[in-house]
Image 1 (tube, rainbow, N blue to C red):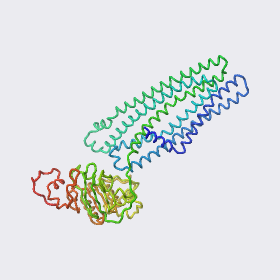
Image 2 (image 1 turned 45 degrees about the horizontal axis):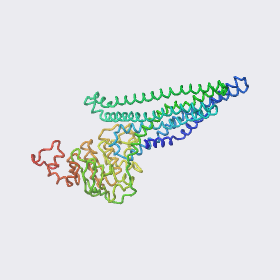
Image 3 (image 1 turned 180 degrees about the vertical axis):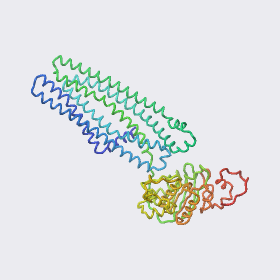
Image 4 (image 1 turned 90 degrees about the vertical axis):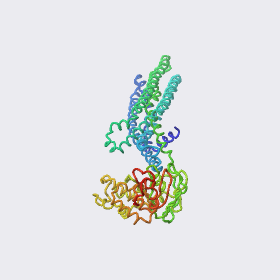
Length: 568
């Protein structure tokens, strides 16, 4: 938990100005509350002795009570403000880190679990400033009560200290137990969230299959476990409350008993005994920290889950620019999980189709080519420079990616196309959209390229065209299209193909293909089979191999059982 505790400490430090207001009001209120028993004692003695100064002490007591109330009100406002500021800082930090790690993050953590960690768990860590500062302020009355009782009578102090040791042991055990239980509770929450996000992504499939009830049960698989952990937390809280609640009144009785003996012997006045009773209540008020300890335990458990995200290593970039070149791509001894050792060269300006059966490693090959992921061994080189050595800016400008299901990010259509460009001028955006056959339908939108994405309902094919436009606007050297035309109609796909072989022909194009016609239109074909490059040649040459032809057929015919079909 040391790493988690460090994160909690950093979060507290980033509570903003409200954190200082919270600290000021909490400790001012605690010190003021500490004076009230003394003022009440003086007031009682003054009124009992008919001393005229009794009225003055009464006024001071009223002022102290008023100041304590004001501090409480301001403290509530400051607690909310500091918590919001700390949560914002933590969420931004984690979000930047998660995006810096890239796709590797979603391979370890499910999307719903990621949302839970960055949302609910980060918020729980954000409550740490209030828990720590307000809990620490409770030490002031405790220490003050010990000092005051020492000044009144040392025997009273010894009695109080014995009880405080018991309360401290109860709180320590409660913190340890609750942190563990809260961690299990939050893990179950993340499991439910992950299953729910998966179900929402497949909502149409579930509705078509009529399996809503079965899917509901699957999503809520962890619900009994969640309830079990919730009950464990309740029991731990109740047990600690009973223990602390039993110690406090017994402690008060013990101190008052000792004080009563001192009063009977004439060593204490009535006012001092009353003040002692109040100081005992303040000193034993450390037992009221149970709620703050509970929140701190949840914050520590949540910080442990958030720390697991921060512990993932972000993608390191070099500082080298990309020298002038045609976009020659080289894979030198590249090995990754799912792909065997690959050595090949894609000449600059060449169009290469990547084909293979499902699970052969096509998408991983495409991800390695533009450094969405790094290989376990080997090097990917663009125009003589290893991709690892390129700066993020150089890599982003050189490589453009388009995917089967593009996610459009930005406020408007133009923002989605120009995402990541240093200077997304309208001309560049429109040129890219025109090459992707998206310009016509974008102009028909209510505000054209300025139409907000929320107000621009689009089909799957239209979204793919915007994804292609975004890739065309970025990839100055290399375009990687991972099944990026699967939702396009035949006419539009041919138009995009003409753009790739026409105005975009100076760029190196890597196209994950499932259609024989797409492979036939490419200059070369990378044929993947079982995670290895089985062949790298022209489509016409590869078509003579029945195993290659079988890649494009739903059911591969037995070897040698059918005549060689016509080359598409």
